[in-house]
Length: 138
Image 1 (cartoon, one colour):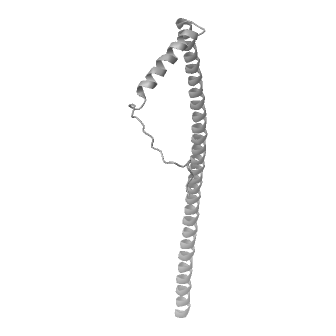
Image 2 (cartoon, helix red, strand yellow; image 1 turned 30 degrees about the horizontal axis):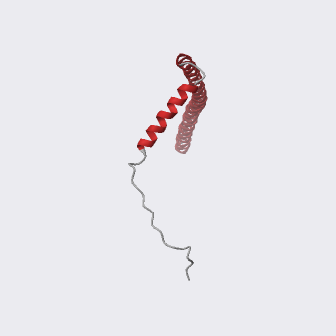
Image 3 (tube, helix red, strand yellow; image 1 turned 180 degrees about the vertical axis):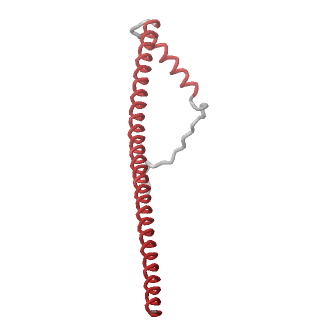
């Protein structure tokens, strides 16, 4: 059951153009009041704005310089790390080359001694065979 208070009703709204006129009127009234109650003259306000802008510019420049300094430090550390690793690799390659040269000369020396021993063995065997053949002839 319905109460008598729940009577349906209809609301009619008018389209007032989005309120742009009201906004402009409010902005103009606010600007006027700001000019009337401003504690300083326009020149004083402009000077204060200039000083604040100058302070902000100096602060921004300092922050940019600090960020640049930190970035350069990080790049220097990275560059030093790469240079140190490059030096380590270069030293390791150089040491490897020296070890290879030493190993090759040692191998060549051993090979020459082996060849000399082989030749001496062959010569001794020939002499032994020749001496045995001479004894057999006598």
